[in-house]
Image: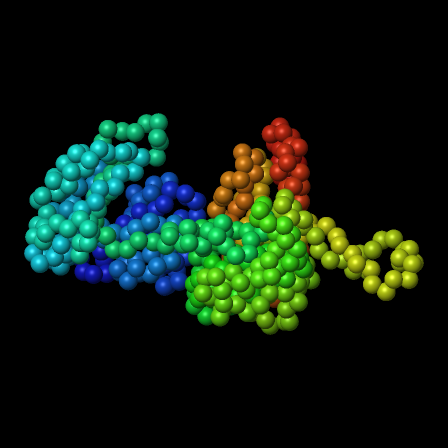
Length: 465
Ligand SMILES: C[S@@+](CC[C@H](N)C(=O)[O-])C[C@H]1O[C@@H](n2cnc3c(N)ncnc32)[C@H](O)[C@@H]1O
């Protein structure tokens, strides 16, 4: 750590929540990139660790991350750290006194917390650890209820609950700056939501998606598979104007059978607008309408700042699209003179994703993000299965396990160029842009017709071995 460290080169420590582990770094990166700030972590960072050191940022940058993140619990100005108590002490003694002084003054109050990861300490041991910090020049009075400043000793005992070491692998000490927005997971829980459906997206994941999409105030965000609007709720919380479409008339109009087990039919005001009203963001609700994503209704030139969506996987909802006379193979005279022939056809997963990426390439602003879920059969999964597009750059790809053999991956892409005719041709010619057909049997695999042996054989066939 540099000796004469000014305000901007201080180090910060994030304490990350230990759920949704895969989503945490992309979330922090996206929030930093919203401020055009680099993501510069310490070389010691481990993917599974709940602690993440950040360099080259200001306290305002950290405050801004914490005002949005649902993956980080708390942030600290890091005063020292080390692999042992002696190393921590040496590091703390090197920290510039002028950086500490404003928080240690005699007319201020403070308290020190001890946090241990993967180990529980008895009260006496915690007190001993606090007492061992008496070499720091604290001049204020201790106040446990309402202190002016809070400090924290954080100890990392690794991530293996079956092998907890006697001494921590790493110890950190810092000044608490802010907590993240974990509270939103509870206050926006779908259990307490006005209008829900069978596939309403969990509140925590909805906020993670809005963060990965870098949704910000006054953005225009669109969900083409809007369902009950959980993603619109999360995006409007960050100040975006929101709209959506869905093929299901009942969902869009908030009518039909209720999803709650103690209720038969949806009530008169169970709809997406009412959901936004529940959270005080109705003024950001543009509208929703019935529309088939395979034949979108947007005029050329309509642009969105972000597209955040959860397409159907065909597990709890069908993957259908509307057809047309062109799709009908039996002779029209068989429809005995009807003027309108309603047609509904299977909407294959690979087509859903190809259409979605193509739509995003045309209807996102440059720099705008597409965030969506891709269901995968885990024994067969490889990175090549993630659909690509010449105008969209893959930013992150995070796994959420659904069962031993299935998962869904949260894919974040950024539009990096406007589509040209040559892209369409490249799209057709380049195998990297050819939709992966394996997604189409996801439903069967989900209900597990495939054994692991079959899966390996299948994988060999798809890779052309
Ligand atoms: C996984 S759900 C989305 C759930 C939504 N995120 C929520 O929180 O309620 C997928 C939605 O896609 C809709 N859908 C299925 N096929 C569609 C199509 N061809 N065009 C538009 N929407 C479609 C379904 O009706 C369903 O509401």
